View 1: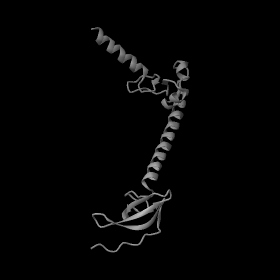
View 2: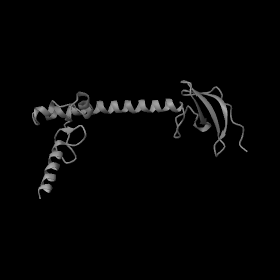
View 3: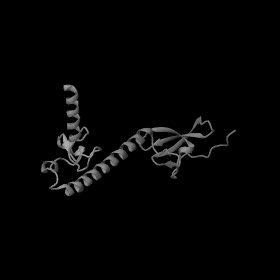
Length: 160
């Protein structure tokens, strides 16, 4: 028979405040607690997921709705950071390529996201594709030189 659980009512874990014990138990006998989020939603959480310490096992610190929003925000921040880094790298690459590539390439947007913002179909980061071509890219992906070579091989096969 499992021991009586420690009273956690009133304890705060992130956005969650423990409000009452649940009748539910895990297979190993751990207690579940009903917690109220700062947004007003309630969530049933196992006691081994309630902690303010950093550890390998994931802590529950918000209701499902808030946790989903937090995850979406962190992904958005990560994507913004990566886009800034790509733009920085593209600017550095372009400086090294001035006079070595056509000027119109250097006037293209820096990244695919930048091209979409401007309503363009092509961009130039100043990097080589997997096949070693230094060429602008399409926003849908793919080096323009690779696309031209691929269309030539397709045309050769169709004319035979």
